[in-house]
Image 1 (cartoon, rainbow over the protein chains, first blue to last red):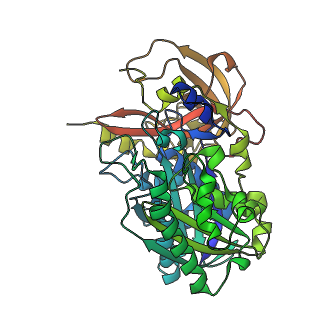
Image 2: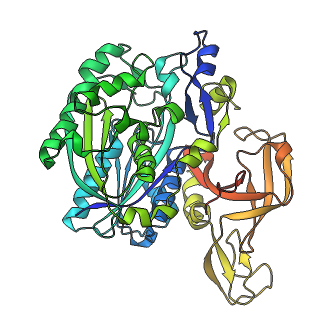
Image 3: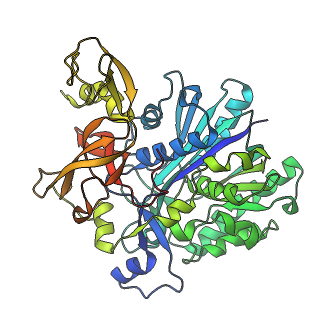
Length: 347
Length: 137
């Protein structure tokens, strides 16, 4: 059976509070203040993905030379024509024979890479594979997209033996829906601006279809799951509205809260569910079943996992997401704008 | 013609993986990688590749307030001695000038530095170790 042998995450040190962004844009203060992660000027998806991959490999205990595939998901690569996954592979020290690929298109890129790598390992064409997702999102100043667009990276090492979590199956749902997009050459994401429309017609249906279909496929019900790591979007600045999608499947706050990082790191895009998974694996016990549900542009992937007794034994090697919650530095809006390139630093 | 790409290609082992050359005779770690003679003992017996430790201490530093366009201001340049005895010159990241001290523990982190002809350059920079649990390499 295919499964996970190691997980790792990375989140930049700098954070900005929602209240600071709102103040700078003449909005009233939020009811509940949250933070989002901001990469330093020398950080991008390449450096963040590299850090997360190192953490995942250390957790797995597998030497980088043994990795035969690197599948990377991102929507914010610095290049249109040049692969950055090869830079990550070179940093980690993977052999030239590794099968290196990039996935993009939407915030679902991370789970797309995971589904593809699962099949690769399952087919026996590779023994060990690294799946890594990283994003650094940017919204136009003064818009909802700016309030929540975060940054981070998450990585998983897949194999068939000595698993810490077995992957029981995956399922996808696709619909043609435009709720968030970014044209080539545009630094900023754009959105439909209609939260209710995006939630009711774009977000909820594919999540219910993907997750509901998965449970049917593997013959389980919501009672069999202890955790759900669901990609959240801030509908009317309230990500809890996104939880309505899970409620339709029989899940509620106790399933979702352990995997939530939205309030601390923002909507991190492709790596969101991997960072959440890393956080959940740390608190879960052997035999706990969990589901990761990603969402991006009207499409959703759901993947079911079950922790093995081996997970406890490897816990000491896991680089805790708590470290990223703890080590942080709060920026003001001007510092944020400089780091994001919204205002120029120098020529 | 762009010289950015050949330069980058030659330096990939040291830029991306921090691999130095360990002298076969005296064991000194030469970094950056260059030439065929050990800078410490002058031996030409050859080298073996040595992945340099990612933790070290600040030996000395300077704070540059005037930099060419495209560089951070201020830039903190530092000489770092790593735990395995290599000595390298790197710039610092996420450090406040007033906090930098000699003997300060640092970790070497993989970051982006600079761009030539639209080609991004990545390599290692020194980041202060602020909490006991933070450094991990």
